[in-house]
Amino acid sequence: MPATSPAHPRRRRRTNRLLVTAAGVLTVGALAAAALPGSASAGEQGGKGHGHGHQHGRYQDVQLLSFNDLHGNLEPPTGSSGRVTELRPDGTTKTIDAGGAEYLATHLRQARKGNAYSITAAGGDMVGASPLISGLFHDEPTIEALNKLDLDVTSVGNHEFDEGAKELARLQNGGCHPTDGCYTDKTFQGADFPYLSANVLNEKTEKPLLKPYWVWKKKDVKVGFIGVTLEGTPNIVSAEGVKGLVFKDEVETINKYAKELRRKGVKSIVALIHEGGFPASPNYNYDCDAPGAGDGISGPIADIAKNVSPEVDALVTGHTHNAYVCTIPDPAGNPRMVTSAASFGRLYTDTTLTYDRRTGDIARTAVKSANHVVSRDVPKAPDMTRLIDKWNTLAAPIGNRAIGHISGDIVKDGTESPLGDLIADAQLAYARTLDPETDLALMNPGGVRASLTYAASGAEGDGVVTFAEAFTVQPFANTVNLQTFTGEQLIQALKEQVSGSNEAAPKILQVSDGLTYTLDLTKSGADRVVTDSIRLNGAAIDPSASYRVATNSFLAGGGDGFTTLGQGADDLVGDDDLKALEQYLTANSSAGSPLAPPAADRITIVR
Image (cartoon, rainbow, N blue to C red; front, top):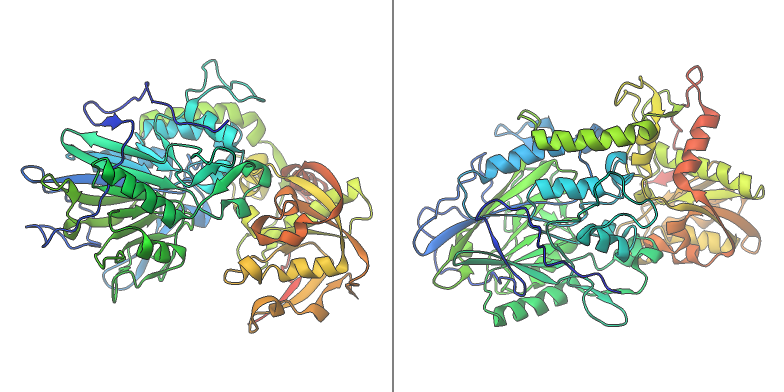
């Protein structure tokens, strides 16, 4: 049965803050003829102030706070995942430690002060690929945290489908996990906010899996939200997680519901889109509109923004984990704000939408927006600290267990990464316990979520790898699968890294020890994999021979565009991939003989 959003009878909201209408969403579209008095230009990047100035008469400033891709990071993320880079006025850059739900709560609550009309929205991937404190409990802790953050609405990201549509429905509606049951003496209540996914349809009924839109209303001010999920979700999640679902085009879906909302009298619309872009600068506060509107961003969201109906006034985006605040002209040539707040709760975006009571629309010439750092120099929110402590107490006996030792950082970065090689080696070793004839293992780079750091994250000591740290690296609960391929199929699979759906943005598989080849990036398409260079233990791949290959279940289902990897024979399904990593670390390292980072020299790269 398709999941549906509840009517939210238990919404714990700030007093007199909002009213929910069951049907409509506001369309934001009409452009004011001239800038309002005292208003900032679209795309303003200025300072720390939030500046919501129009509060009376015809115009009413509505504060839109937004963030995306939290991925269950309740505790401050570590390493590069917990930092942002700021561009200073003198042209130098500064690195700032950022993120953590205790700090995010404080920043959002401070930002709301003085803003009677304030909405908080998110762009998807609130859960999934989460650290142990949340992932171990099927992300119930994150939903509880988002309730405390007073999140009003979010789109559904691809990671919300990691455990399938039924589990997404449980996160929305509540109830104990069907397998693991209840984790405390209280039944999980579910989300106080609606998940929106207008473009995900039940294959049989052709109706949306969740509510397509939602309307925020306070007094005479209405703002509507349409939520869409990444159209390519079936290519990047387990096939089982999206079974029976159809993912429609984002632009067509948004435009469809924008028309429906306008027919219902909703004229101010925000689209929550779990798709993103690639900024020209890594600095969170760079000028995305220099030299011209939207010139500082490329990728899918740029095309989407140029084609979404002018009836939509702002786009909150995500997925690419990047930071940007851009104005990209809509199809009518009018400026429209497009934002993303990086990931892991390191930033939030504060956008001012000036609502015109006379037209019921947003005066877009008055729209301004800026990203703000969730710095850790503010007091921690006590309620969030209590929540984290509660779940850490439950997770500690499992998470603090030492499973291995390393002599230095084993990072996930690079075309071929040391950690990717380590995981491939671990899966090969595990696969050989199931079938000694296993030849090699392949690992998808997107499945490696964090680096293993030498410095202790807690009281375990430097160089000690805990189960919690390994869980953060591989949180998907994929299984290790064995399949038999011909040499021709193996070569084709390697070429799919840089061709077909992966041609524009290659996905380079991490390979186990013994498999070597040359990747020539001066060439194009499939030719970038030099066929004659592919060797297994020094011998050329024989196109007509059979090879036993280990992958995770995601790749074995043809994920990430590797259709050939979904066509193997003699399938054998093993245990989960995290157990394979744990067994490898335990067997191959000790305090006296820690594991050194792999050299990452199996793929020769020509640039």
